[in-house]
Length: 79
Image (cartoon, rainbow, N blue to C red; front, side, top):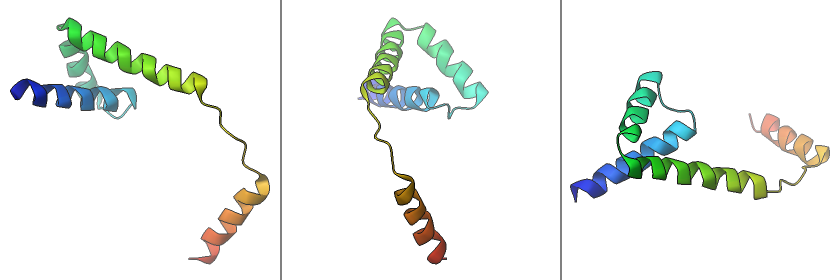
């Protein structure tokens, strides 16, 4: 069970790293840990590739200026 917890912790830290939410010290520690374990390198690579795949395949629809203004108006009137 200990390795499952470690893997979940690693996966969480990898996500935080890729989201740019780790401190410089946490980032440095994570990268050192990843370099020491080929499976961790593989996990990081898979996550990076998945994110890149999603970005390249995702088609974002344009939002009309009218809709944006409508949302802004509703927000400003609710305060």
